[in-house]
Image: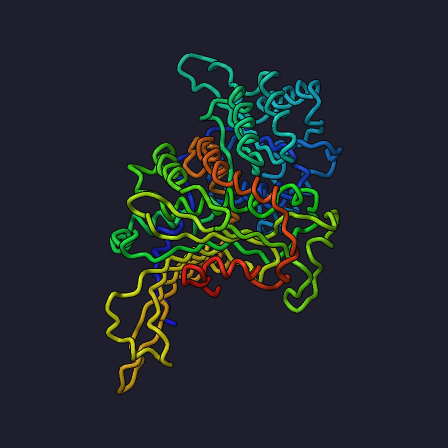
Length: 519
């Protein structure tokens, strides 16, 4: 395998870690702060921003949750920053950062408790000079979103006060909302309406952590900053596209959540569709939020209604992962013994526009698959005249050119093409040029939330979902979910843990004369 050699100016790499803009002083208020997300992802991400000099000097974090954790919260978050963020306990900046982490106990559905929260935030403004700027982060279970939004509005915390003096910048208030954003089209519309009654759309940041990954953002750079790819990025040259989001883990004790979600809601409607939009969108006129969102929404709205025959669902049974036996989904904790929840979903979709008409796009996502990998595969058409059809090694067919974008793990981009095998005869074999992020830029401890948190503080919504995009993807998935609900599967479980999913998913591509790429 041929490997790219990438040389990066150390000064350029160092400069790239620091934002050209500095956020305003602010308080990050995390609802649901006792959960894993805060400890393993959000606090480590905030500290990475601090290390890079991207946080304002006047800054504080307030965790909000129901349990009485006032005495242990900051120390627990420090441990999470060290273990989850790869931070040395002796880092001289760590203790000062942890001193700015506070905790407030309250029930999210308790109307009267919000006045106490309001007072706590005013006190922090006075202590740290944060000027009334607030970034609320909803990291709670989805059933609390509506209550939190409503009470923030009713208690005057959703809209900023006027500037304290002439010429001063008015304070700002923004809210980050975690997925899942609704569970079907009607619920997503209802939640959007509830949120928009309290917050303006430009205050709302619907987060998908996939978009914080460097490899996802690099799709746009790869396409639009390189003259050799965009010219062939269309139906004239591309045979088909595959997007895989595979996990080897099971549901990790989240039975009640996953029973309501399933693979289509949990991964395909958001993560996979976001990846598809980046691959398929037209070049935006700029990289500001409105321009990028407009092109993404055009992609979603150009997707033809998904025919039920072009869908496959699966559920894992007992099997083996990394040499260890694991139970099937129906034997997981707090899962119904006859559950109809899918742990695997595959779809065939088509985008009906001038660039992509006639190009099939295959999407798949699942739990307990053979390995953890998220990858986009662009397979090009065969040359129209196979001059070398008899020269392929071992008598095999000449292989199509393939561009594969590895989102995780082993992040990078590979290009497969045909080359002559050294020797006196004309034999041809596929070879791969491979670009690996860690080799080129070094191993990073960043988890993807750094960019998204910073963008929210900077009021940049480019990498966040707009309500129109959320509703457009739910409009595609809801008919599939409704059909599945009315037509239960008789052969669940239909794939063993540790495999690549049900046989029907292979048949989905074989009907078209294609096969899933081996990952």
